[in-house]
Image (tube, rainbow, N blue to C red; front, side, top):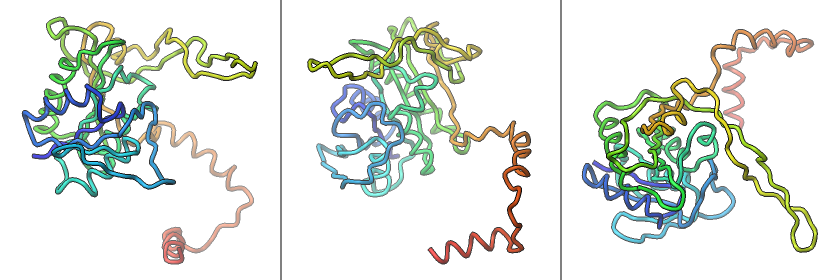
Amino acid sequence: MHILVTNDDGIHSPGITALAKALATIGEVWIVAPDRERTAVAHAVTLHKPLRLHQLGLRTYAVNGTPVDCVNLALLKVMPKPPAIVVSGINKGVNLGDDVMYSGTVSAAMEGTILGIPSVAVSQEGSDTFRFDVGASYAVRVARLVLAQGLPEETLVNVNIPNRPRREIRGARITCLSRRRFHNPIIEKLDPRGRKYYWIAGERISWSRSKDADHEAIEEGFVSITPIRLDTTHYGVLDQFRAWEPIMNRGIKKSSTPRSTIVRTRRLGS
């Protein structure tokens, strides 16, 4: 059984080393990760420069691209057959709530899901030091469950581990995504020549969506496990928005050509 491991902290992060070592107890691990830190690149794909693959060891490769690039190269060019699972991490710091929209760690797992592979993102709470051994042990538990039971279609799993010794972790909770609030999210300063520059930073001061929320689980010492679905369509309001159609279509002459025929014609002509 093949397991793909990647991350956004870079190939030399101790988090990916701990994760790969732990997962090697249940399968053959392949590591394909960025050659440097690619934090907060979200789902970026490299389109305007060539990607280069460097083998650093047995089944271990560095890529001069993003986490999503790494997953694509691994599945389509590097690995001899598709992996049974993709595990991304272990990230330095949690990916809670809205963080999943920016996280390269989560995006790598999302790309694995898009390509049809059950995928998991793993993040470890911490500041200067991180308990990657604790995170790795829970990553293996989740991976075993995913391999045994599978995942629903178009669904990935986002796992966050609190910054506590293993004996002090109170268990695991299935959670939903929180909504974060920041104080002073953009910091303005002056450079030595008196010109303004900006840092996107700020201090997280509050959360919302507290019922079964991921941040709440972490604060209380639980491992947070959040299922995330690729399809973000808000189906509950589709009928409400269909009221827009007559207004948007006012003055447009209806075509007698079936829509499917139009699509087919455009594809043939492209």
